[in-house]
Amino acid sequence: MWYALTKTVAEKTAWALAMDRGVSMVSVNAGLVTIPDLSATHPYLKGAAEMYEDGVLVTVDVDYLVDAHIRIFEKPATYGRYICFNRLINREEDAVKLAQLLTPTAALPQ
Image (cartoon, rainbow, N blue to C red; front, side):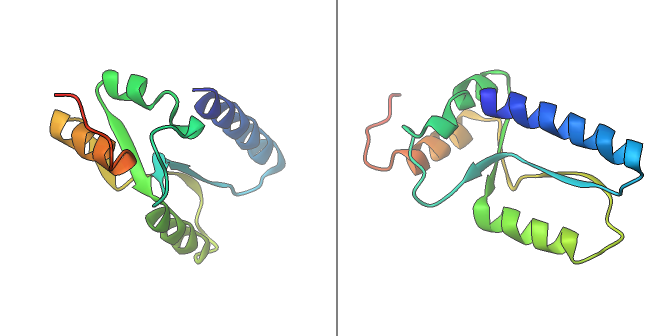
């Protein structure tokens, strides 16, 4: 979960600098980014199981995230913090679907 921690610390620092200097800032915080060739063995997914154990895991397809960035930056007056996700995983069936997406050829446990 180092990625999430460092991203949070960096964003907090950026917001402090922006406020100090009077700069309008936009921050896009994405859920777990999924791409077509992402597999369960990718180091980026470390900590995903723990996040789901806490009750909720959100993911976002990379194309959806790109579109969100484009829409935000098309409007110069945009300011603030945006949370971006297009899939909520909070039920066992959703977790199984995500596991199948990440490991399409592996047999899944019951």
